[in-house]
Length: 319
Image 1 (cartoon, rainbow, N blue to C red):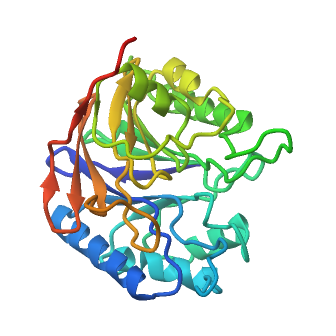
Image 2: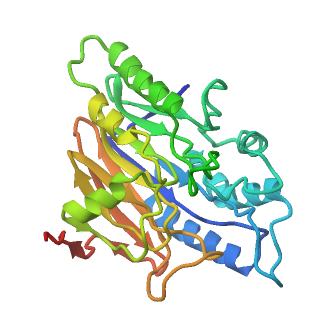
């Protein structure tokens, strides 16, 4: 399933990535999250906002705290600041969005109520809800770039495999077919247009890139990837169009590193209703594509209004 948008007249396309809002019911922390989102959008004026999962939190809470009892309204409130600005937005689910009280299909129905969403529920015959493509048309009307969205699931469904779920084989088959479909639709173009991929749970290669390559940014907690490597990264390499991937899930990681030509990037956690780290400001990752370039610029916009373009450099330790 595909959606279409266009580069600006100046040949650029700017995306703001919000991740792990963990919105619950409009409590004080949620309002701080909304103020951050408003600050980021007003500063960056993005062409698209992408929510990379855990937009709401429907999981259990500690004793004495109030859980999210109305997931439908929580979702509406979480995206309201984007809707109010008439900015197109796309969403993939995380592990906490539908942990209790609501299914992915029911929450997707709420997503689709909104005027400015470009989210698509995706094919019914593959795993997850919200596997889809957005094609960016260039100044000639051709597809100048593609954005892929994948539902990375929640928790393993296999009793013998604890931990988080993984992007399934049928999703990977769909993704590779999408890449080929776009290329085949432009027989006069030799090279596939560049693409970005968005999902919630990092793939195991995020740990590999940290261990083996020079990375930029912070790693303040383990990479909480699935215990099973389902081969998504191999598929991306073979497809040849994806130049960057973006995830959330780990709230105090924001690093990026390049593995075999693909930049693996974390977002910056945006929500106040969840854990963080003292001195590590909530914010958003911003990325800018330019028509005709197989690359992207990226930076952070954080809660104090600052634009962060220089992050710590981490070099791998070779034993």
